[in-house]
Image: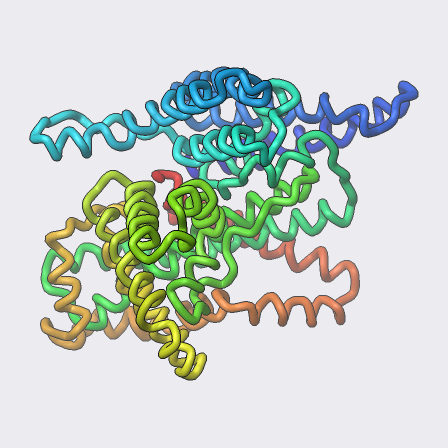
Length: 472
């Protein structure tokens, strides 16, 4: 799917861009204002998005189309206040039903002792389902107007840069640009650089980290040494961040090219000074969704401690299950629920007294061990929950410090991990901005192109792995 998606982008995206930016010129030649081309541009984006999804997974294109066709009139009815509660809950139930069937039916049947085959999860269903929910909720509460027409709504739901792995853009964040947006060469150039940066994150950092992870996972079935266990955990920590933030950068960059300002989805989360700070920086769009549509409606922190605890419990249970219908994901959500609860009510003042370096180190270690619960389904090679005790034993050195091969891989990958964790801080961006000011114009173009070509070389090899968040 990864290669298929990139094939579509690199072969069909230039054609789409050509027609997209030619339309205003054609309208001007006919005596119209350039902005009159916007409906035609939206139609082009809708067709491209549908082709993009059909290119990778045509069998579930109908499901996504039905989601659009059912919820567009639902939004119009909500705007007209026609039995709003009945319409709202009917649309929500209809939208959630496919997600529940494909993602959770086997899990809940297993709880009740029923053995069923888990259906194949349609790509991107979690992301576009949450987009629909945010749209319906915003229209229902009067925070947004209903989409003007079916094409506009279709572009919001299916917009191909965000379709497979987010960010989960709320309708009120995209509403203005759907009906009126501006384009410029500067924005397009910035978007292209952002896309290349995300592509490089995926191919040059997440890819090698994933390859090392696949090699090390085989050792967990035995008794991993401390070095092997730590290399495995660090590999996944690097892979999941650069994989997902890379996709987000690509989506944001493509959005900029087409005139959409997509909200940031990552803000250097591995530099966080607390768990609360981490979740303000990691997968920001998902955190914002649960805050706006679950936590606050449940009362948030406004109705006393018991209600706050309940709201946090629901949010983090759902956050865990959103990532997958498996016990490890639920445990992962509850892991953060407990730590955030402790942080909110017991440790907040004590933590602020620590030096910032100590807070960052403690938070990073907490996140690092949290990824242990993500590993059983977060990597392409299965790691069962029963393997976790062995991995934990390896991390604390129960099976020895290192074998010869482990030390070889450690020494070989020290520069890689140093570069990766340096890249997870704001320092490379600041450094690039300073260097860019001193470079001649041709160099500011040549450098991203060189990075892009190097990333393409990695894509052309057989060493890449699919985006991790495609499965969620």
